[in-house]
Length: 106
Ligand SMILES: [Zn+2]
Image 1 (tube, rainbow, N blue to C red):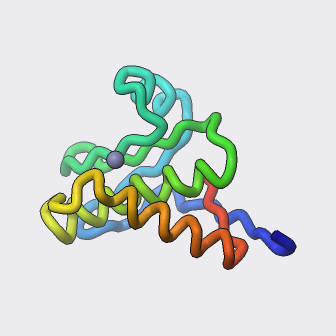
Image 2 (image 1 turned 90 degrees about the vertical axis):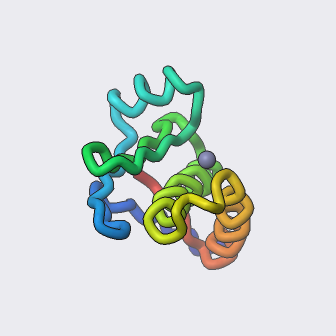
């Protein structure tokens, strides 16, 4: 890869009617430890939040960020019907992004 750009995801993003906080902080680490996940999305009106493990290296971090963003999109626009199959789309998008020199960071 000759020209890879790392794009920082905004700290909050409107997805559907909710404003999701997107974090890879101490709170993320403790929230993820409880579940044993690398990423976690919560789509409650009271808590719209995406947590990403800060210790991930690229391109795994891009994959996890896309996976969790897709969960939020699935929840808001598709009643969560895709479920864990979002990972197939996340993998495809990560492959496409890699060829475009795009990586994501929180
Ligand atoms: Zn998932």
